[in-house]
Image (tube, rainbow, N blue to C red; front, side, top):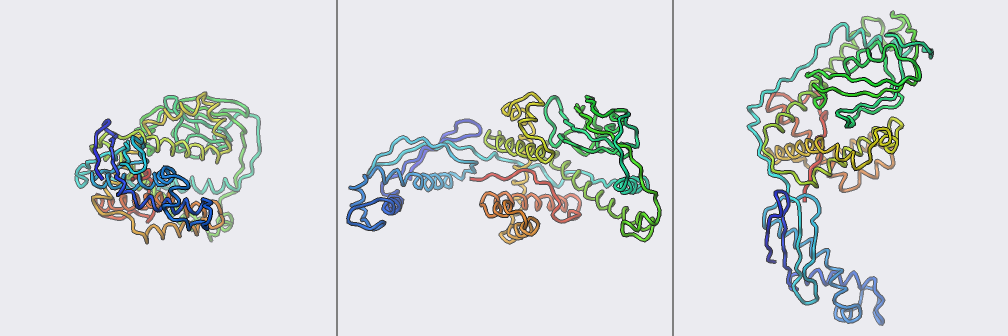
Length: 444
């Protein structure tokens, strides 16, 4: 099965493949059997007409066309294997010669998986910092618990620091939507620390029905690395302002929450906040490690097909977040005065970073034999089935091969993160299974 290979550009190759009649004879006969089942050949029951009779009745060209996809799949895989190529996505096929009894000649244009050269991972020095739980954090959490039982009254006067406001929010960075930065009917308790420094202060004094635009600078140390050190624009529509009256803090309040005293309640809150702090430390450390690896790894040019796949995932994630908050993607595009194509262009840098992270994770897995076993993937799927047993659509999706591939990648990414933590910190991830999904693997 001769073939020739030429580079189209830094990310694509063109393979010209020739398949002789002898080499595709098996696929021809299999195609003839399929056609025989469907064809109405006089004197023969379906599927029983001999090959020579079928050739006369429906023509050799019809049989060859039926066999074509199978011939191409087999010969393309053989050529890629012989050349030791790592390809991504489906090849673009151009038939150059197709005639019964003759060589089949076609060109396959396909993207290559970029070569990744990792830095010396053992030399990476990235500190994992757990923020200590202070008394004020416990106080704030208990105040939030009291707030859950607060009596709230809508008011028309300006919001004070003790109030709650309900808003629609949209965050943009250099006019590009921030991932996860859209919310509808978002409730903000002005007395609590917000994850965005200065956000609550910007809302003190607003009134019901107002719209406010403001810009906040995220500190260089902010845990959202893509926003750290950046100035983010906010558009906020005030839906309601609520005055809040909280219940008195005492043992009676603690007992309503299943604790015998305020002291026991504080112990429980401290334990929960400490666990959250460990999880957040893991998240921040994982992001910092990947950022450093992206900086130091050498990665060949990334094919458009890989970046476009990540763009598509970012788009669907945004759409899902919006729908969860009661906003349609059409309404959102109208609000930011962009069409879907313009939004896709905005996602390019983010998609490229995610693609690099996925390629690096894949390379670490390859070099350190971290591919998930069948048992690990099956175990993850069974775990998901248990969690989503009442969601029929989700359960059906779990049976699809591409979903299994996605889950396999997720498990592999988790194993890579656990391996990195042992390698760099000498210990396992605090909570097994807690890890980011840094994009999906791509394979031929």
